Structure formats: C-alpha cells, structure tokens
Amino acid sequence: MMENQEKKKIVLSAIQPTGTPTLGNYLGALKNWKNMANDYNCLYAVADLHSITVRPEPADLRRRTLEMYALLLAIGLDPEKSIVFIQSMVPEHAQLAWILDCYTQFGEASRMTQFKDKSEKHPDNVNVGLFAYPVLMAADILLYQTDFVPIGADQKQHLEITRDIAERFNGLYGNTFKIPEPFIGKAGARVMSLQDPSKKMSKSDTNVKGFISMLDDDNVIMKKIKSAVTDSEARVYFGDGKDGVNNLMGIYSCCTGKSFEEIEQEFDGRGYGDFKTAVGEAVIEELRPVKEEYARLINDKAYLMQCAASGAEKASCFASRTLKKAMKKVGFIQLDK
Ligand code: TYM
Image 1 (spheres, protein in one colour):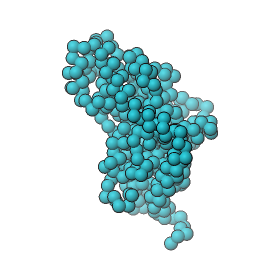
Image 2 (spheres, helix red, strand yellow):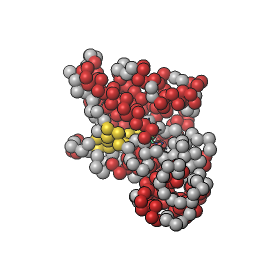
Image 3 (cartoon, helix red, strand yellow):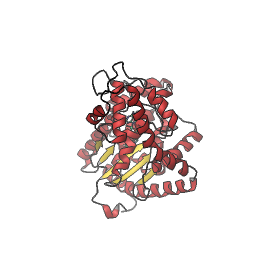
Image 4 (cartoon, helix red, strand yellow):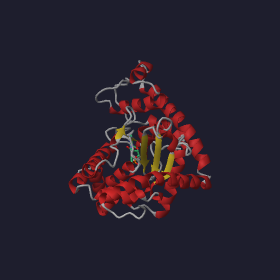
C-alpha cells in the first residue's frame, strides 16, 4: 500500500488509551487524522506503552486499548488505507526509545511542562518512564520518517524536543531521521473545559460537566453545553474576557466549518440560549455517526484483533528499517549483513 504511494508525505500520530476520549481529543487531533487520511500515508497508534506511566489496572488497560482501537476505526479511519496499530505490538518503538534516551539530556527532559504537571499531580509515582515519556514519543514519530504530526497544542513542546533529538542524532551520525513538523489545526487546537475555560478540556477533570466524552448520549451532550460557563454580556462574538464563548465558538466552528465571522453574523441579536442549542446540536450531529459505528465495531472483537495484527505487521515493516539504520550508526553489530 505505502509502497506504491511512496511519494505521499508521511503522517503519524497517537493517542493514549486512558478512557473515552473527549471532544477536545476529537476536534484537536482525531478529526484531523481522518481528514489527512486521503492525502497522506498515515500511521495512527494507540499509545498503550505511554499509558503505563500511571499504572492502570491490567484488565482496564486491555479493555481501553481495544476500545480506543475500535474508536479510531469508528471515526472513519480505513485500516486498508491507513496503518492503524497498537504501539506495544511493534517492539521497535521501545527499542528506538532506549537509543534516543541516550541522546536526550536530563536538563531538556526536565523542562517538559507535562512532566512537571504530572509529577505534581501524582507525587507518589514519579517514575523514570514518566520522565522519559517524550523520548518514547520521539521514537514513535522518528521511526517512520514522519513529515507531519497532527496534535493538539498541548503536545507542541513534545514535538519540539523530538526535533531537537533528531537534529542532534543526525548531526552526530549523518542523516538518519526526517525532521517532523507539527500539524495543529486552527479552531480545535485547544478545546477548553466547559466549566473553567481557562483550563484545557480533559477527561481527568473531576467535574464531569467540564468535558464531553465522544460517546456521551445526545441528551448529556446538550445538557453539558447548556450549562457551559459564559459571561453576562449575552452577545456572541470572539473577544478578550470571553473565554467561555470563544471556546463554544471554536467548537461550533470545528463541527460546522463556519468561520468566526459567519458565526457572529448568525447569532447577531440572539442570546446565549439559541447559541448553545445550536452548538449542542452541531456536536450531537458530529458525533452521531462515530457513536453508531463504534457500537457496531466494539462487538466484533475478532475483526478488531485481525486489523490490529495486520496494522502492527505493516508498521513494523517500516519501523524496522529506521531502527536498523539507527542501530548501525550507533555501532551495534548486525546479524543480517
Ligand atoms: P493524548 O492521548 O493526551 O491526546 C491525544 C490527542 O488529543 C489532543 N488533545 C486536545 N486537543 C485539543 N484540545 C484539548 N482539550 C485536547 N486534549 C487532548 C492532544 O494534543 C493529542 O494530539 N503523548 C500523546 C500521545 C502520543 C503521541 C505520540 C502523539 C504518543 N506518541 C506520537 C503524537 C505523536 C498524548 O498523551 O496525547
């Protein structure tokens, strides 16, 4: 497949199986994954190796990994067209990560804001994996000579360290890794909490009204949007001090394709009630086909496992080329010539 489309640019991204993804994951990343699938050679992974940094229950991890895999197919990724795989099934990721660990400085990894946030949140389990997490992410990306990485704004710093590591390695050993570019959409890059629009929407929010899960029922979605925090001005426009409205406008824009000017015109002279109803309906319509397809797929475990096996095999075929190249450069003896 990728062989006869060699000229297309390569896209890779991944998502952790830490529970049902939110509307933020969807609009910030997954929707772009789907949109890019026609124009690029795409690889999409369920990043289960990353997930054990927070020590999930083994049975939960297994279930969530398969659920996330099903959800990736449900958003419309075609496993015949894109390589959709589970990270731990492709051992090259962990292998390259170790090599890259040795080309990453303690200081630069310490500066990662996600590491600082997570170690503050879980002071009882600040493990080395959590610290090395961005290096594993760099391995994910660099293994495939990736051109573009569709992500939300919160992952931008990890992309920057990936580029730094790749440039350092290339500088020492000659061209080994393609230097990847982030692909961050305009409107959905940072979907904020519906209850506190100064914080990003996150499934770990203790207030469930702050986030919409991709599999929430229609009436739950509408209720959450209706109770979203706005302001007392009752005018729909994008502006300073209007974080709640700005966020809803971003969500509406992503779901309908309308620009901010069009949205301002549409709701000119109308209050927040009408606006919120329209946003709720747009989100419900956006997620409806995904939920329907998910309900069908999640009951077909045999099919999912078959797709996962074939995805892992295809991914490994590409990953092993880069891994071999890197191992040779570092000085490891190779058995096959
Ligand atoms: P993760 O699993 O936290 O999130 C998956 C994707 O969703 C985006 N995202 C958001 N976008 C907009 N608004 C939000 N509120 C929001 N919340 C999450 C994230 O930016 C991400 O793109 N480390 C990564 C997974 C990963 C990866 C990779 C990504 C592992 N290897 C290689 C790209 C390439 C993570 O934890 O994402």
